[in-house]
Image 1: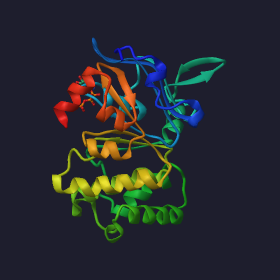
Image 2: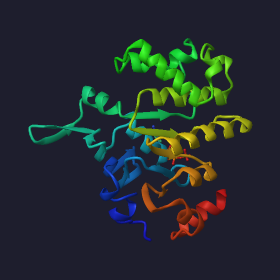
Image 3: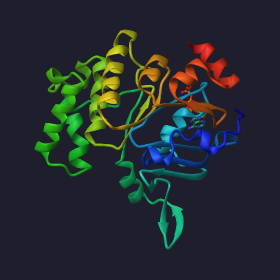
Image 4: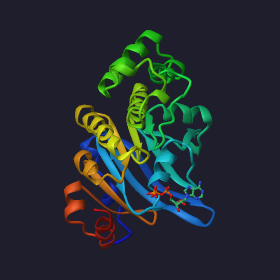
Length: 271
Ligand SMILES: Nc1ncnc2c1ncn2[C@@H]1O[C@H](COP(=O)(O)OP(=O)(O)OP(=O)(O)O)[C@@H](O)[C@H]1O
């Protein structure tokens, strides 16, 4: 497969598999003269788990940051669950999205970062209820009940009344996972969520995420260096190189029998 992968090949599933939850349409992102994403095209269907792999600097985190609207593309459009994230329609024309529009579409997306980013002055339970109450306007009782369910799911029932600093890194990251899910996002973005953890804490966090992947219908877009985890949870793996998807397919194909020389080189360097 050439570096100019045609659109069909970079699309993780066809429309017939379900509605598209994420679409990047000819997205270009530059930092100065450096073109990080180059007319990037890909989509993710509802309920699918898609992992982005590729060499350092190939633009994987940039994709997640664009979805979180921490960055804006220089060209192209991004759609989330049928709504433009980057633009809005006004008078039959597409114009750059205003803040209010972005905030609404962003509610469909939850993200877990490498650093846990918890509120240090709030106990665990409040970390999880804060956004549902203040951003979604959920009642306090309902938010607490949901938070307790989620904290049980991530194995932290006994820690709901502690402050983040009283928890291990792995436990803090599990709070961050519960907090992201509390907003009932359609899409969960995971950006190297175990990279900042001590090695003995990695497995516990990955087990929780495996469980979520296998027992919920949430759509996931994942950047990870944990290739066994990627193999376990992914419906599709997208291999990035120089700002483009050069190869995509189910994990058994990408990891066992990649078509592209660059994919083989990358995998042999890390596996
Ligand atoms: N805010 C920024 N300003 C300038 N350059 C940036 C900025 N953010 C990212 N870059 C550059 O964009 C390129 C892509 O970065 P990105 O973090 O998306 O890569 P990545 O594939 O996630 O890499 P890694 O696997 O190392 O995390 C890199 O060369 C990086 O230095």
